[in-house]
Image 1 (tube, rainbow over the protein chains, first blue to last red):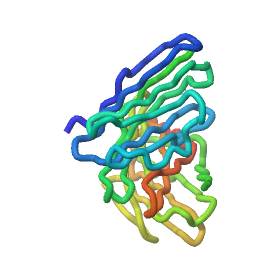
Image 2 (cartoon, each protein chain N blue to C red):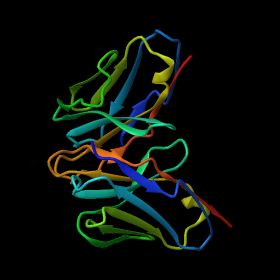
Image 3 (cartoon, helix red, strand yellow):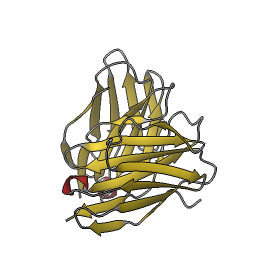
Image 4 (cartoon, rainbow over the protein chains, first blue to last red):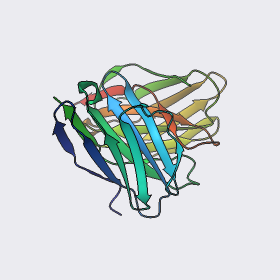
Length: 114
Length: 111
């Protein structure tokens, strides 16, 4: 079991450019989550999918951020027109739907916007 | 939106001494709780999950839940330097799957 795989591990992008982050959940897990981690805010929930359908995107900034899950084996988080305040570690997690909320996390994608 | 407060912010203990971490929730909306650990530059590793009042032990980690006081504790028995990491508590609800996390406690274990 390879665990949750996130790519890229590190990304440096210029202000105003687009950044796309990828997540491959654990095989058989039907729920996928995105969180953002910063020193100041800690871990913030962004969005989650169940069986590829978006369920809760209450944590997503309304502008510039979007997430998709085109198939059961990967999800993407896209940030358009990146700003320095978007710099963070973006963590993806997956779980079984009936796991009682045990989320298994990837190692994260560190995004730096300069 | 539930708030989760962890204390202390950082804790330094010697190898083999008990380490105790505290987590306080702002309301009773969560009905299941977890402790995670994060080593620098790594993802989160689940340590112990607890769903009812009392204690739950997983290896050297023991979680203690007291719903009435909205507290969840983590005790680490005989910690080693390899246990030095950021410890995060999280609460979830049975009606949804997302977790709400505290800010974390940085644990340092020295020889």
